Length: 299
Image (cartoon, rainbow, N blue to C red):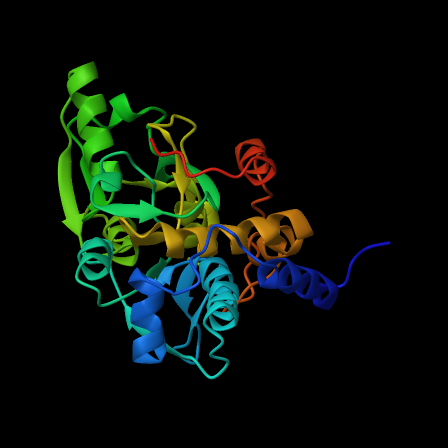
């Protein structure tokens, strides 16, 4: 018999509320900060569909926001503070890590690639998504590989891993691109649609969401060539194993109980706000493996 959504949530909370030997009896680090402030601060993005973006009411919604909502409930249980408040903080790619480091936010609730370089300054939750770095171009453009971008203007979002990966491929294959850096994904896609660039290099799921939400989705295509496969995780403060253990325990409970899969289907395979667009992006084999074997491995 198929479990209902309420049943999945109930089972998840039972698992979250169970005793956790790995967590200290007296909260330290982020948990102590949250307890003393009486609030948890979530960093969210504005245009990262379907992970973290604003709906018609300017409310942050998305897959990562739903995961963070479950984590907030787990924190309330752990701290025995049912009235704990949630503060939402808008962030961008270029500001998400500094805001975690300086304590402005406690979790980044958005798409963030777990890299070994970033692990030097922040921590990541277990993997919540796996993407591939590709490029979106006009449907009739003579571009099939990244090498075909040689000499062409390419839009890139500041702070994204795509910048370094494209540079490495260009150096390896001896070609150059005319890079146009923008503050966010919407601006990068706008540069493409207005003709300022001939390609936008980014994670395939984010490209798919931008195409789906555009006025003429059939005008665009994503090339098959890929720069790298990347795991996403929620960004946490480094050196705080207690908080990370609670976050990972919550996510694993959702994965084992089926709620994670239900939330994935909600945001990736069904119509989503604000335009009721369906991304038709079923769970990949790589993500299924990450769900079956939770881990926080970076690239």
